[in-house]
Image 1 (cartoon, rainbow, N blue to C red):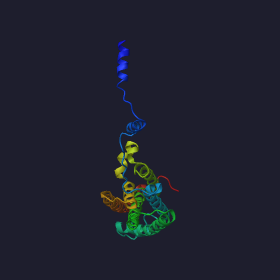
Image 2 (image 1 turned 90 degrees about the vertical axis):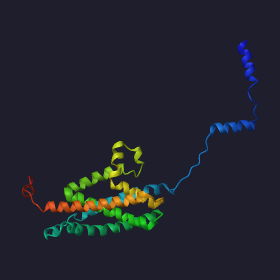
Image 3 (image 1 turned 180 degrees about the vertical axis):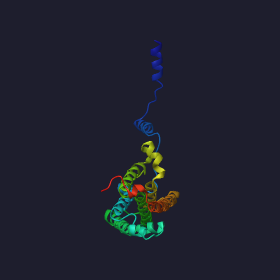
Image 4 (image 1 turned 120 degrees about the vertical axis):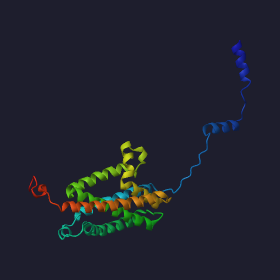
Length: 246
């Protein structure tokens, strides 16, 4: 009897809504918060977001192929007794001129053929030349220190590390922890960051950091190559009498 009385009393307290009121309450319950989405510097296409990564990758592969055709350290300047830094530049400048042509062809095809329209086209081309110069110097240093054969293996291994830690395809926060640790220490991270801002807009301090880091890597690579030249001028017994002769 007490249950019946309470149920009867509760039924009298149920509000009686119209169809319009029911619809309004349903909308409020289903969407309690209104979302305002604001996108700064949007990329017009999916490929535009990937372009900074793949352009940097293309430049690296091009630099690797150039040093497969040209000698990273020309022997004649070394034999003639030129300074170590002059020997580095004597080998570097021909490769750089070839690579400039490569970058110009790539940029022309991407811009006019594929339809990529960077927000800052001239600065994008200039930054690509800086990335090119950095990768050329870095790969030259690998070959100078480890030798041509081992240097190519080291270069490919370094490329694999950069591909997964540069954050060019997916945000670096979604990768494994070791790659997040490596992320700030590979040059491709800064080439991707710089190209993203030049292609899509929204320039901030990251572009300046990218330019400084790439210039620093280029200068350090030149110094390492010069050091390797000085080291190679001193012959050891192992070099004079290798364990395996062909």
